Image 1 (cartoon, rainbow, N blue to C red):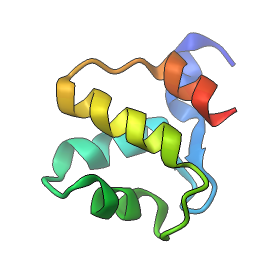
Image 2: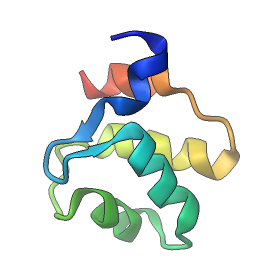
Image 3: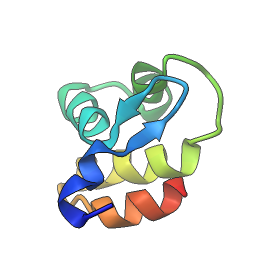
Length: 74
């Protein structure tokens, strides 16, 4: 998958959300990570916790590295 298409990669199959969709959700919420994660995944499972936690922090600090997130998903 090319660098420009990384945002289209599914971050968690529980909710079928892409990296870009997760970024948008995290940017629009003031919820803490656990509740914001549930907005993305629609469940309470921890299967994609590393990638979502890293992405949540990246959004919070304003520096998003989609390549690093894609590696965490694999």
